[in-house]
Amino acid sequence: MPRIVVGVSGASGMPLIFAVLRALAEVPKLEVHLVVSAGARSVLHAEGAIREEELHACARHVYDPADMAAGPASGSWQHDGMLVCPCSMSTLACIALGTGQNLLHRVADVCLKERRPLVLSPRETPLSLIHLKNMQRVCEAGGIVMPFCPAFYIGQYDLSAQARHFAGRVLDQMGIENNLCQRWAGG
Image (tube, rainbow, N blue to C red):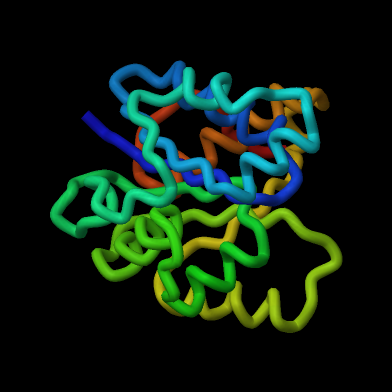
């Protein structure tokens, strides 16, 4: 059974990750393991539309971000990759530099060292040169930087349809079969 780790860090965009988590929860035989950072909890509270418990309900397992002894912190714990969405610039920097300050950072570090897919969905604009260089470091280490970009060609413009499509594209990057996104059939 495929399983992925989803990290939620402290950047604006909680409605997006909630929609992505709901879409992932619909994928048969996919285990979702969730880490919600302290910063993400603050943003959830500030944005106010979604409660942390609603994120938790979409996952099979939820880990405390301070629990550095949790299964996903080890390279021997088998999984199919990780998505960090939204990925704050602070989280991006910690991953790019390998500082591992919490479980979310550590799982990302494990993905890179074990050559497992790591997809980061940064949420910031405009981007500074520091942000871009950190993205470059992650890419050079084997990670994938995949901002949420609406796919207008699917003909659906609401957030839930776009987030579902994005979730499918993320699973594509992890090699997990899905029917979440509309495939381009040519012009």
